[in-house]
Image 1: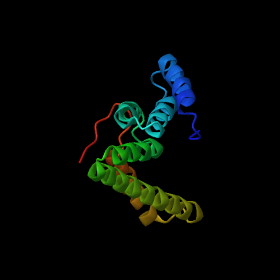
Image 2: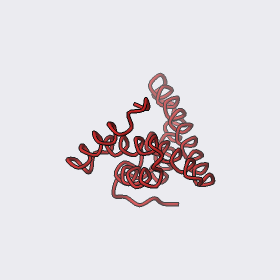
Image 3: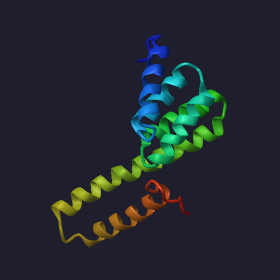
Length: 134
């Protein structure tokens, strides 16, 4: 979409967001379109709305990091990217543990680690409407 057609994508996503203001995918699309158009402050408005609605969506967090970086808030962008890296590593480890438990159902250490990871990720990436803790 970043082929000189920013105005078209902005109009399309703005229309979708107007009709469905809780649509995380549309908010993300509008935010990314605003980044491509160089409207970083406006992009963050939509990306923050999307993040508040879908706090576990790493694509939204990555787009926020881009907008923050382009806006000049490098330290905030780096902090966001760091949290994305932590989440991706945890998701990778969760997949490994799930495979281990499927292959070895009696592997209780893997089950306990999965429970701990689930609790940690729940605190770091709350569901919509929940507050982030610790």
